[in-house]
Length: 166
Image 1: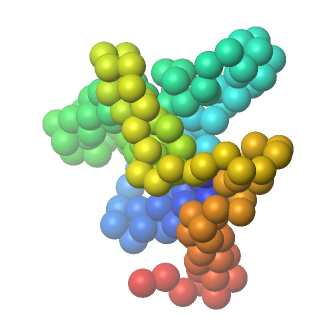
Image 2 (image 1 turned 180 degrees about the horizontal axis):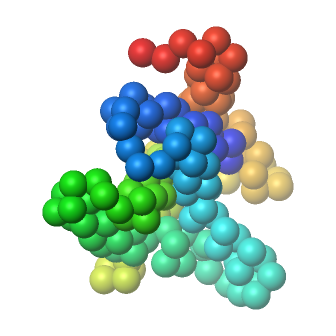
């Protein structure tokens, strides 16, 4: 995914504000946490370009592993369940990790994701993008799947502009 991570985080935050009507954190904080979480796994691109010299796909790094995010999410969710939503930190961690997991799910649409890393070193992808064009990113932008990203982005913009969300 190129453009849909932040808009998908916005949509997720809208869903969560409807579901979590009375929380310990403000609506603005919820939006900030979820939207940062929705793009956060791609912070590994800095390492990919400036340290690792692009030696392996950045989706192989731990920030793109379900095995990293799911235990943190489940731990914070369990904390919330036990203490009845009394912890702002646990709620923030749960929201952040949930958004990061959404990021990885979206990346799996057309980008190789090592779903079972570090236990199994095999990438998985829903739809393969074949290399036809140079530079490499044109292959993704000219692939039909980019329309899905545009639709997610348009939907998020529509919600933001109209305020209508069902």
